[in-house]
Image (cartoon, rainbow, N blue to C red; front, side):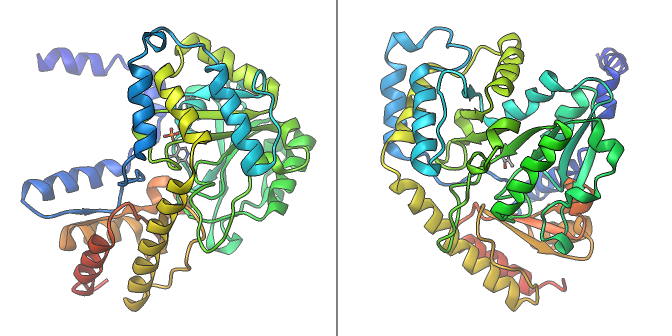
Length: 392
Ligand SMILES: *Cc1c(COP(=O)(O)O)cnc(C)c1O
């Protein structure tokens, strides 16, 4: 048997070799080994809410799943009623007007949209601009479309906002797409509205399709309200925003998101999607309508939970000598360290704590680790207690 498998490995297409090395694999392996040894691992690695999906949304799915009308192939672009709910949410939340018929597309999670959009816009050899550190799919989707990634470094020195003037002219001329997102994963940075305006001007000048990834707009603290890129003058002329119910309503497993904005970009992505998937389950879309149009108290409640965890973790880390600013948004804490892989390995090996090495999100993530505060205050306190015993 093993012979046959080894021989199949050699048949993999070259594009699989071109994928960046999966640096999280080593941490995953170490984590599994610790668990096998009976260690009570505290996992701050996963960007997946530990809180359940609110009950009224679950009830809505159950009722919808009992209706045989939802059991068929969905509409490729999403149920019209779901697209209307997205448009009405954007109007209420951001004062952005969208035509549900042409400017909204249902996605099977925003990852799906990010993974597919280069297929619609990128020819082999075209550049795609992507923030680094960043959501890994920006790069892998570009490589699948045989594009070239030009990274936009996010560093403490630029407040984790890319310097568009630093992009070489020949790259600007051959760039087709730009991926970025604020509130940002993994750095937890937020962007001033003036940066969104800069992106619009830049995209206009160089004919670049902009994809703003806004998965964390609702996870904000201390009174901060995150904008939509589409609020920016001219944004809908140059691109779209990907959004998702995953983080807002603790629905990561449900796979439901949306793309919104420029009708031409939406249509291009839609053409790819009609050829690779058959849309999101209608019952899930109906539950999505309930999420977007129903009571929003659940979102505020979740933010309060994350805010308390953030305060406990950041205060504890500062007592340990780590200087971490309080993030205004996302459920991440991005902490400077000297060597991210060594720090993460030591935390796991000596304290049974999983954090993600920043370099796993791209070379500019070196010098940081990411904590996902998707664990209870009790577990955070336990982790801080264990860290007190380490020479970090
Ligand atoms: C979680 C996340 C997504 C994707 O979420 P979906 O579950 O696919 O909707 C996209 N971008 C960023 C930055 C994320 O953190």
